[in-house]
Length: 206
Ligand code: AMP
Image (tube, rainbow, N blue to C red; front, side):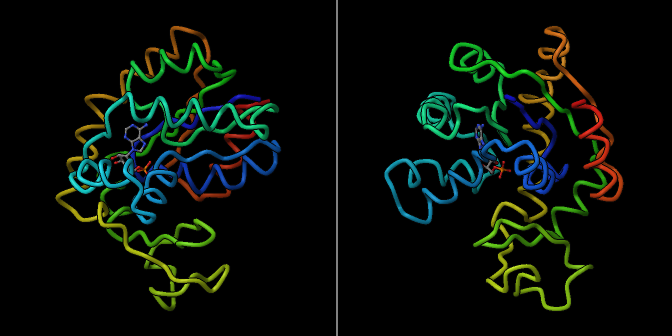
């Protein structure tokens, strides 16, 4: 199964991908996580990407397309993939059609005002990639799942969040129509409890 999770930042793509990827037995590929690892490791690509990420802008298409092309050529992607955060532009979607076109695209919707609240309170585990809201944590610094350190992403600050949402509406939302036109889009309401969203995704995939 080749699957894409589409949706604005904070829609729950990463959280849902952790559960769905293991159920479908396909690798969860988050381009945001790959870029953050490159930034941490100070690779030339990471250093070049950082200024875009910190500003809430998209990293140039050619960088992402090559990164994803390489990742999808790895052995574990022979059984499929679950892409989270890619494609984010029509140019990326067209490149993916040539590399390995998706079977299905799940569009997770959440209203903008909820996204802002979710992202400002979001903490992410640097080890297991678990995502938590501060309202549910007893200690904002410790991952309740694996005990590792939680971080507040630099791009989860209000000014940058607003820019990421603007970029989403301008450059990524057109992909909804793009995949609808191909008959591959399934839309799921992401504005409810994570377990309910998971259920809606699994039934949309049946
Ligand atoms: P995410 O973790 O998916 O929210 O991604 C964090 C940041 O990484 C984004 O705000 C972009 O700067 C960059 N990024 C991730 N995926 C892509 C992509 N497909 N195209 C361009 N930039 C991306």
